[in-house]
Every structure is written in structure tokens, then in C-alpha cells.
Length: 369
Ligand SMILES: Nc1ncnc2c1ncn2[C@@H]1O[C@H](COP(=O)(O)OP(=O)(O)OP(=O)(O)O)[C@@H](O)[C@H]1O
Image (cartoon, rainbow, N blue to C red; front, top):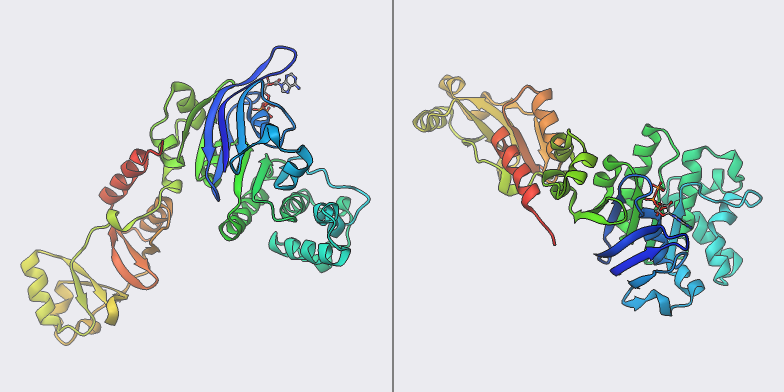
């Protein structure tokens, strides 16, 4: 969808901002550009909407070399969000959001209806905030309006330059969460610049880590954190990259172990004999249909009756697809040696510390060229 082919940009004063850049952002993919100040991230972004022209090489959007596309037409297909937002101070929030549709010649009523829909999407009630002026909003709210405005004409491509930069960490996390929810629904092709590695791994399907003027590594968050390609990437992602990987790696069915199980309606003595024969001290208790009910100790089953008479509820579980960090937190919170993993209520298996370790290795090995 966006493709850089050996792109070099040298500014007139001789500064080479990017050198021999080649990578591709697939349709519906979110790629974060991260790296130290002055390494060429913003230049990369501006090469896409022709605010900057390459010295050599090509940039393609949707298969077309942008050099051959009229810049005004090109920019209509590309939403642009910048840190300082750039809202018009004398226009209401609703009219600011409707800017691009109006430029495209939409009828005023239709453009405003669309703007209201988008304000809703970014979490601002259009009745409350639509009539306000930008200086009557908080910094975080202004940034949301910036995102809504960029999406207004439904462009397939979004360029975002430090879109959540100028707010405190709590609001920033909120905006990131909202943006991820929105992106899951609208699936734009997104290039997002940040200098914050945490933000880059949280938001990116893949990450381009820049050194001075070049991409040092282009890969998934798990692989960048797990196998930094160069010393420069390793230094940038930080010494705690192992911990960071916990939050970007998902629990998958292949990571799970199958512990001994019994069912609520199994006779307790029969379950006890079976579990003793297996050498098991406890078992997971399942309800009809394989849903998780809880757990039971083998010794408790000696009391007779049905397993349900002895079973305990179990709260130490996470949904499949949760992050390893969430799974690990659950283990710590319940002081448990493993955590159950569910699909809905259905029991899939348990994640142990050994499974967690192998999941981390899997994420580092999942190299995508
Ligand atoms: N118009 C220009 N003329 C000359 N040099 C420029 C121009 N614009 C940017 N540069 C230089 O190109 C290099 C890359 O700049 P760019 O803005 O792309 O970096 P960045 O990674 O986005 O930085 P930051 O994180 O600080 O915003 C820097 O050395 C910068 O000084």
C-alpha cells in the first residue's frame, strides 16, 4: 500500500535526512517509525504526501509513484495528523472536523453529519464539543479532534506525526487505547512517527527503528525487542526490553499445557483414583461443554459424592490472545503456579512459567522479512 524503494532525501544544505530507504506498509497495517531525534522519521512521512520530494528512489501509494500524482489529489487520499494539531482557531470543532469533506465539495449538512459521527468515534460527544472552539478544549481533546479531522474524508492512508505527543502519560495511554480500538474497526494503512519505544511497540503491527538516516531494523514488536538487529537498536529499545516483550506477546493455544482435568458430575472417588494413578495433586474442574468451573485437590475427593461437592472456583484465568504480561500479572495476583486460558468460557489449557518462556522465544523468532 505504501512502498519506499531505495529512497534518499538530501536537503539543499547537504543534510542527508534519509538514505536508501526500502520498506513496505501493507494495506490495513500500522507501522510505527521510531528513533532518536533528527534521524529522518518526519522526512520519511512527508515523502509520502509530497511535502518533501525524494532526491532519488520512488515512493508508491496504492501502487502509484507519488511523483506522478497531483499533490492536492494525493493529499485527499491521505489523512495527516501532526503533534501541534493545527486546528483553525476561529472555526468550531465541528467545522474543523468537516474541513476536508467541505474542501471536497460535500454539501454542508452531509459534511457536518460526517464530522459529528467522527467526533463520536474519537470519544467526543458532538453535542457538547461540536460547537466549542479549539481553545475551549484540553490538549488531549484537541488531539482527538486532529484524528477525527484526518479521518473525515475516509482516506485509505493515515500519516501521524507524534499524534499523542503533547499530553501527560495517562491521557496518552487513553488516546492510544482509543486509537487502537478505532483502528481495529477502520483498518487504515498507517505510518505513525514517535520517539517513544513504548508507544511504538504498543501501536505497531511492525516497527521501523531508525538510526541516523536509515532503518536499522524493520520487524514485529516481538522480534525488535527479542532480537535487536544492531547495537544501536539494542541501545534504543533499552535494557528492560525483556520485560517490554511481555506486553507485546500474546498467549496462543500452542503455548499451553494440558493439566489433569475432571468434570463436575464425575463421581469423586473415581476421579480421585484416576488422579492418584496419574500422580496428580490437583485437577482443573470443567462444567458441561468444557467450560472452566474451578479446581479440586485430589485428597479432597476422598470425601465421596460428586466432584462438584468439593470443587473450588478459580479466578486465575485470562482470555486467549491476552498478553503474557496480563497472564503473568494474574499468576502473581493469585499467587498461582499457572494461569488458565479460556476462549469465552471454554477451557483451552494452562500457561505455566515454562510456557511463558517458550512463548517469548516464539515471539522473537517470528521474523517477518
Ligand atoms: N528543510 C530542511 N533543510 C535541511 N535539513 C533538514 C530540513 N528538514 C529536516 N532536516 C534535517 O534532516 C534530518 C532529519 O530530520 P527529520 O525531521 O526527518 O527527523 P525526525 O526523526 O523526524 O526528528 P524529530 O524526532 O526530532 O522530529 C535532521 O538532521 C534535520 O535537521
